[in-house]
Image (cartoon, rainbow over all chains, first blue to last red):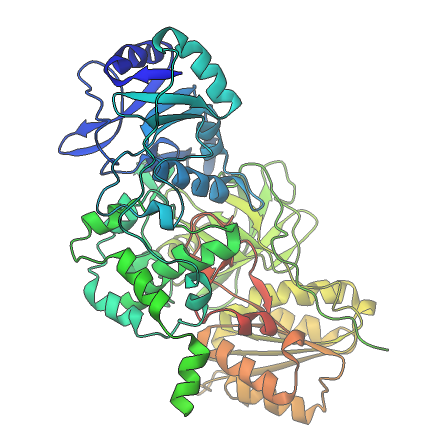
Amino acid sequence: MLLKKAKAGALLDAIAAKERLFVPADDRGTSRFVAYGAGVEPRFDLLNTKLPPKDLLFPATETLYRWSRDGADLAIDSAFAETDPFTVFGLRPCDMASVDRLDAVFLTKGYVDEFYQAKREAATFVVATCAHPGRACFCDSIAASPHEAPTADVLLEDAGEEWVVTPQTEKGASAVEAWKPYLEEGDAEPIKAACDLKVDMAAVPEKLKGMFDDPIWSDIGDQCLTCGTCTFVCPTCYCFNIDQDVREDEGKRFRCWDSCMFTDYTAMAGGHNPRASKESRVRQRFMHKLTYFNDRYDMNLCVGCGRCMRDCPAAVDISLIIDRIAASEPAQEKEAMAHA
Amino acid sequence: MPKTPIEVSHGCARNNGEPYVPQVCRVIDIQEQTHDVKSFRLQTLDGKRPFACEPGQLGMFSDPPYGECMFAVAGVGEDYCEFIVKNVGFTTNHLHELSVGDEVGLRGPYGNWFPYESAKGRDMLFIGGGIGMPPVRAFLRHCLAHREDYGRIDFVYSASTYDDLVCKDDLFNVWPNEPDTHVHVSVYHAKEGDGWDGAVSYTAPYLEQVFAEEGLSTENACAVLCGGPSLFRTCRESLLKLGFAPEDIVTTLEARMKCGVGKCGRCNVGGVFICLEGPVFTEAELARMPRD
């Protein structure tokens, strides 16, 4: 089945008439996934949005419970709520790969995060492949492919004037069934693009295990401003804080995105901070993305979307960091050389 | 007969429904332990124990409108869970202002627990310092409640001064009267007129001294350790020096925690989360982890 790009608007209108629909669009000087409606112009020409789509499943701020106090008495009410179905249309393969990572974090390893789960189950992801990956894109050598997204509900393969529409899950099949009036029979040749920027990840997770004391971390630490931009624009960074909003005798506890780049992220009462230095925090960020997460979930925590490289004010470039790790001598060899 | 290896299980935390939302509990008892340490017994509003938990597990104690803090559960009774809290920051300062009857939030239990099954039959050497008491106390109390399952019990405990010793009643009146249970207490600094006439020593040298004087053996022993960063480092070194196998040294770690279920990201040591796979690890496991 084919969807003519010129006719996508009618399909979006039809989807939006049934349920909430999120599309990539400009929004107050930035770009992100916004609720489709009057005045929203979808930007399917954007490679990936400046802000990642993770807030659709894992909002930047999300209330967990509300409390109220009456003298010594305390009442606590969970803020958990079911989520109505919604569709995310025009996600890129790297961002779909980021959803796979968030799924692993929030839905596995003992505890299921019900706040995330409710939104995840309500979501239908329609992924549009990338015909022309950007200069900072390197998904196909780290986590994904510009022309595939195996876990998407529906895949839209870019074929120039149209998309080749393929449902990949049950949810996707029923969605596409409903889209029939807007689709056309026929064949088109999807564009199978590749990224120009490549990294060689093969040896990186193992090499990093011997690089805890490598000078690379102080080098990056010197460069980094620890502003946290990389973690907020990252589609996979999921670390959160739990804090609260107080209005006299009542309030709510919420979770909000946090950043391992911040000093107080690991600061404990009493003053001890295991990661007080920039060097140690930078090490944590890259070790987490490129080796710790791999051990735990069998995948990298970087999907090669390039956002952190594009937005870093200090030009910290994860692809160059991976190159440097890949080119480093294994720890044992270094030690042997030191003793030679 | 070969001894059973100490086995600490990880990732054994149990899903107790809503992991982030606390239940409302009532403070039923408060004891002033030292000038800056208080213990609190918490009970559900209908008079029950808030949760069943194993020795070494964690509970997230909150006092709206103030914050939430993770503590090792210091002990459980038929109808309460007990926490021992040192006043070190904003939230703990407010916890110290609680009165009996006040309602607070409690969620948990989180994390793994001490290997009390595989440690059966061993001589137990507990080591604690200052506010490192609560988890050690939970395991020690378990051993005392199942006294016949364990060999000789020694507890080496230190604090900065006599006034900083936590659970003095347990240390000086209760535990020394238990069968084959030996409590060794030192303080780092003796103060004029504080009534302390015992050992004045840092924990690690005191541990080595006690070990020699008491003629203790590592043969069929298990060491359990909890304390601040410096005590932790020096006592690990001492235990290894005394001849303990890294597999026979059991420790419990702490870190800043927010979620308690391995999601929020901050309490990792390498690829493991202290709140979920920990907080209990053997020295052998720690040695394989990055020094994070």
